[in-house]
Image 1 (cartoon, rainbow, N blue to C red):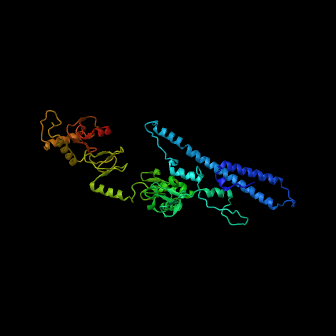
Image 2: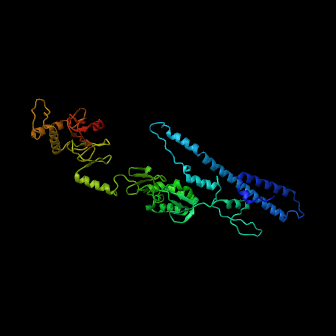
Image 3: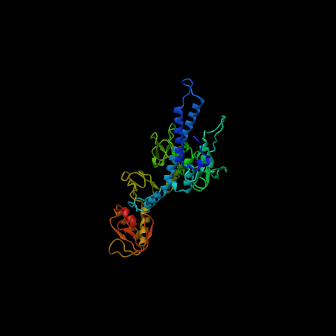
Length: 446
C-alpha cells in the first residue's frame, strides 16, 4: 500500500478519499486473511497487532468521511434550495388573504442571513476548504507521545491546508474569538458564549436586568444555539413571569406558584398548580368584598363620602346623581335608591329631592327661554320666572317614570347630558322627562 503525497491528497474530493480508504481496507483484510504465524494459539504477533490497529484507523476514517459527506450534503441542499424557498415565500406573501380577519405573517428565516450561510459553509467545508477550528495534532513517529485526539496523517494534511477563521472582538469582555463562536445580537454587536450566558443568567436573577439586552432586547430565538440547553429552557419557562410587571403568586406557602395574567379575573387569581384562589391586591387568600389593603379604593371611598356619592350594591360602581329622581339604574342593570343605596322599592326614602328638582327645572327653563310652556294656550314667560320653574318641576314630577319613547331634535348647539359631547344637529330631547342625549346615547338607551 503505497503512501499518497499530502499535496495530492489535499486536491482530492471526499468521494475519492473514501474510495482510497476503502481500497486500503480491502488490502489490509486480504493481508490479514493470508498471514499465518507459528505463535501459540490465542496470541498475536507484533505484525498482526499493528495490522489490527491500522484497520481500526481506516474504519474510523471511513466513518468520519461518511459523517462529513452527510453534513456537507445537508448544508449544500439548504443553500441550493434557498432561492426556491425564497421564491415560494414571496409568492405566498403576494397571495391575497383567505378572509378579511386573517393575514399572512412572514416568519424570519435564519438561513437568509449571508453570515449564517458563510458560517455553515465553514463548519461543513462547503466550497473552498476552511478550517473548522480544530488545533489537534498527531504523532507520526514510532515513540509514544501524549496527544489530544488521535488523527491520521491524511486528516492532518487536510487540516493544515484549511485557512484560519477570522477573529472578532466580543462586545462584552473585549477578547478576540473565532467568529464561529460569537453570537450576533439584533444591534449587530457580537458576544462570546461566556458573556452571552452571563447576560441571560443575570436577567433571571436581577429584576433591572430583564429582559436581556445590549442596545435593544436580545431574543432567545436569535442566540439559542449559543446558550446551554438547560439555561435556554429555564429562561423560556420563566419569560412570562419575568415579563409581568405586577406579579401574583399563590398564597399557599407550600405552592407559591406564579399565577399568569390569563388566570386572573378582576382581583382574583387562580393558581394553575393547586387551583387555590388568591387576592391580587393583598396577595392573601381570596376574600369577599373590598380588600382592606387596596389603598386606591380606600381613597376613593373617602372621596365618595365627602361628595355624597352612592355606590351600586351589585357591581360597586360609584354614582353621582345630578339629574332626575332617586331611582338609579346602574350600567349592570341593578336598581337602587340613591339616598340609602338599598335595592329599589325596599326603603321609605323620598323619590326625589325638592332642591335638586328645582335646580333641574331652572336648567331646563334656561335651555328654552323663549319656548311656550307645557300647557296649550299659555303665553311665554321669562326663564327665571318662578312660575315657569314651578311648572317645569311639576312636569318632571308627573313624568319621573319616563321610558323615553318620544324624542325631538333640538336646534342649535347643545350638550349631551350622558357623554358630554357638544353637537349642533344631533342632540335630542325626551319630550317627557326633558333629558338631552346625542344620537349615539339615544341608541344605547333604547
